[in-house]
Image 1 (cartoon, rainbow, N blue to C red):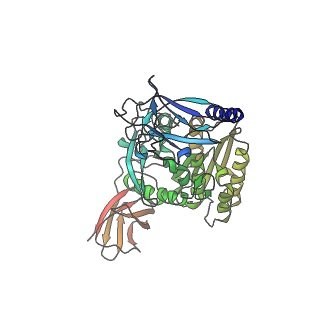
Image 2 (image 1 turned 90 degrees about the vertical axis):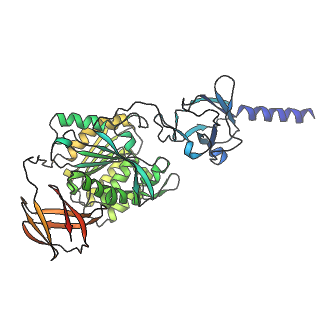
Image 3 (image 1 turned 90 degrees about the horizontal axis):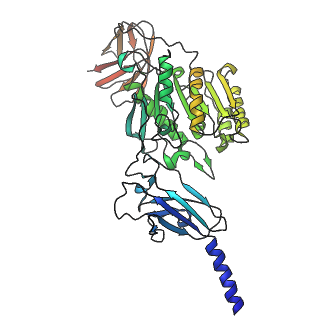
Length: 457
């Protein structure tokens, strides 16, 4: 009997030593009184309101819970009883899953809850005054969800009649504002403002926030069985077919491919490389920072190789740290060669591999200016005179446009008032046949030189 007791004691002793205690030493000041704090994770099927997973006050101003022994790596987050009230980062935005590793010995992990997503954060914004929130819930019909969109306008946007190139950048939270970034910002706004003051023409930047837990799903058209993916096609459809037409309609942009860029890092670089092929007729400038090609490299390579799209006008900038991973440089070179084999010229592909490069925003912000300037160095951007008068467009009942005041033959895009792209037309002074049947209503014509409204009676 003593042996049985002794074995039982040894078992219980080992079990207790293998437990993990989570100790929350600080919670947000705006946490509602009498809130119940739960932990949800891989160890309880991610139940945000598990009655067995409630943190308890320890009498010393902290809250604790002990997780029974498990194996491998555990992922978890704290909630106030629902995923709508899950913890966030310092600004109240998405916080990636926390992790710990079951080590076989007792652990106590001291933690801080920075914010609750439904209550917001506390950091001070570092965004420049010419950065704005375009929309907090811009609808993405291809994914049936909404997303925050951020917008940088050049310093002279309000005082000129210029039209601008546009950079569409992923992970918008990390571009302009340290208060919303995951681990530091790119300082895109400060960089472009500084370049503008030094004589740069200027560009608009559209920052598309990532989808938090859906980020990996949205940034790859292909599924990685360990990490997700599969919604990248719909995401790029949103960027190219919904968001870009809206931006072109509502802001003074240069809509042609040579003036529009896709730029991202890690998985954002992956989806940008995909977009270079899927929408080569929309975006010809591609910035690829520390790409996560490992996620579905063979799928991407095959997609590039089998594409029937013309990539002759694509201009692609690769930048990465040589020590980010053992395959980072070889992966970049493999995808670079796929683009070269499909017609991208050697003059239009640039690779920069840095021994000091790291997989973080601090590295990418230092490389952004060089990438931006190289991508657009061949485009002749000239300021339009503010004394220019707008051309006159008259629509006739014979389904023709009469145009006058055009300086040259112009390609324009026709929109209805909902922002739907109805097609392209070529305009020159005089009569222009429209091969699109229009119903009675108001329409808009957008070119690189003008935005005009007209009506069909």
